[in-house]
Amino acid sequence: MSTDGNKKQFWKRNTAKVPGSIQHVYGAQHPPFDPLLHANLIKAGNKPQATPGGKPKKATTFQEFESITSDAWDVGDDDDELLAMAAQNLNTEVVMETANKVIENHSKQQEKQRRDDADASELEDREEEEARDEEVEEQGEEGEESTPEVSFACEPSPLSDGRLVKSLSEAPIGSPKDASLHRQQSLPHRPTIPMVARIADQNTSGNPAMTEREASRLDKFKQVLAGPNTDLEELRKLSWSGIPRQVRPITWKLLSGYLPANTERRESTLQRKRQEYFGFIEQYYDSRNDEHHQDTYRQIRIDIPRMSPECLMLQPMVTEIHIDIPRTNPLIPLFQQASVQEIFERILFIWAIRHPASGYVQGINDLVTPFFVVYVFEYIKEEVENFDVSSLQEEALRNIEADSFWCMSKLLDGIQDNYTFAQPGIQRNVKALEKLVSRIDETVHVHMQQYEVEYLQFAFRWMNNLLMRELPLRCTIRLWDTYQAEPEGFSQFHLYVCAAFLVRWRKEILDERDFQGLMILLQNLPTMHWGNEEVSVLLAEAYRLKFAFADAPNHYKR
Image (tube, rainbow, N blue to C red):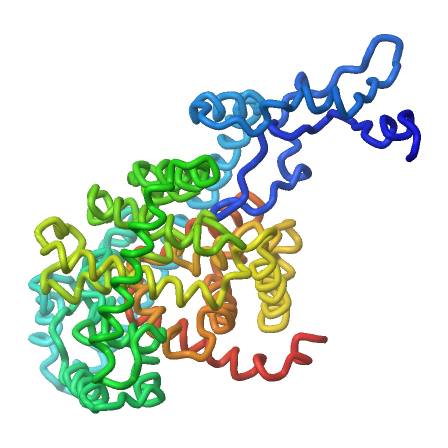
């Protein structure tokens, strides 16, 4: 190493990969790229060509390497141009052919499932009709006047919502289409549930009126919160089963550690923390375009304007905060408003520069939204989904922004290793999820292994975004009620929720018979109509798993 020749030899490199080349983006939506899974998407023509005469390509010295990559970290390139360059490495014909095969395969499976359902429904209708006829005959033999009862049963019967559902004996059973129509008529109507509105009392029944039980629970919360020193343990017990909307803002602030339990100190604490946050804004926000901060802010700025429905449907990921903000709940108009997006920009930028160990990582933007929505509810009574935040007073908006920042910071303090270099916290949780599922449902685990589905390919997003991309926002807020009440809810209890969530789709997973089908299912689970009832069942199962495994790590072993 002492001679110039040795120094030059030390820096020789193979230039197959150099800094500055287009690489896949890791983060909220992308687990590490696996070349084995994507090998068929690479053009054959893009493979390095052999040099004439079969001689290997000459390695370059460090000086040549440095000159080649001198522009590797230049900024300001057009995003669309970069994406177009990246897309040149993909063979469009292969991509389209693979997509068509997946669509064709699923169409066949769905058609087969429809035929099976229609046959089963037809058989069930026939059996019920025969049973009804036999019952009528028996009643006739016993001398009872059954004719009025039969004619009454055959007439349409009104439901509570005014719809008419005919009896089974009237249903035509000639064709699968008729059987499917009859089955739809017989099922209770499932209401359209708003994405955010009525979060506290919304469930799958669609009845927003407060029940006697809910009114009683609200009174208990108010009693606990009214004391001079709030009993946080009692508050956690009450909150585990959900928090009423009216007291959710103050309860979240207390359980997250943002506010003290002592009532007299709360107002002064709020004023001090809010002033401190806007002090950070004055001190740091103007530096967002400085050279050492502009990459972070650029990522935020790209993410915010792309808040569109197409982003949620196709889930495309480009390059940090400005890219992610527009992807935050794109179907909710609230997050399309310019003033809301500016609030998110400031919150995420200030958090990123105050936490240099992790900086901003895609997915952190999602974690602001529950706090923001809950604290908006503190100032309004109507639905928040289409609410125009510009109608709020400036002081109220500033309070919502500061409170959201501090509560998000408290949350991330407990899971920051999810967002540091290489995201070790997520890697550890995904591995623990795989072990846990192999113990609680070996059939599902083996099924995914059979079709080479890696847990990292779908559970990375579950851990990175705390299931926010898998559940409607109203369900996320209900889930976080329990996370706030659980000791280490976001860092540890979330693992058991993910395991219960995966096993919840056991039947659907086992019905899929190929890699593509499993991945499409696991990345697009049908939870749009979920409400409090489904989340409560999920949390109960997660608690059962925690009780069995959390304090008994040897249970993971076979």
